[in-house]
Image (cartoon, rainbow, N blue to C red):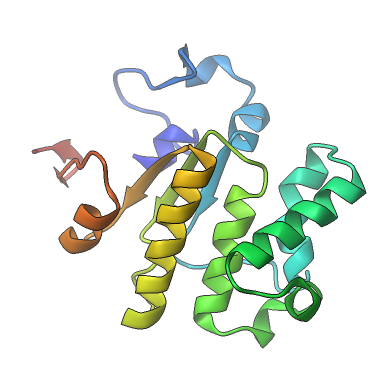
Length: 174
C-alpha cells in the first residue's frame, strides 16, 4: 500500500488521491518530494553526515543554505540530538535508535503533507521504540501532517493511530 501511495508500484485497480488529484497526474519526482518515507531498514546514506542526510530533500528543492542549516539544527534539537555534537557525525557512529531518529527527521525535513512509515520501530529495543513513538506523536501534532504508519503491533497502532485499518493478504478486513 505504501509503495502504491508513492508510485513505486502501480495499483491493479482503483485510484489513489493526493490533494484531490489522482497520484498519476503528478510528475513522479514532484509527488515523492511531497511525501516523506521512513523505512524499517533505516537507509541513511553512510557516506553522508547526519546533517547532510537530513538536508538532502530540502537542498534538492532549492531551499537556501541558511534555511537548510536552521531546519537541520531545529530538527536535531527537537529529538534531543544536540546539533553541534551530531550534525557532522556519520551514521556508523550512531546507535540504532539515533539512526532511526535521523531517518525520521530526514522524512520530516521538507515539511511534507504526508509521511509514509513502514514498520520503522520493529527492530528497536522497547525503550528506543517508546521514545520514537513519542517523537512521532509530537511531530504529528506540531507539524499537522498525515502519517500512514504500517505496523504488526496492535498496541503500537492503538497508541499512534487516529484511524486503523487491518489488512490481510492485500485486502482490507477491518
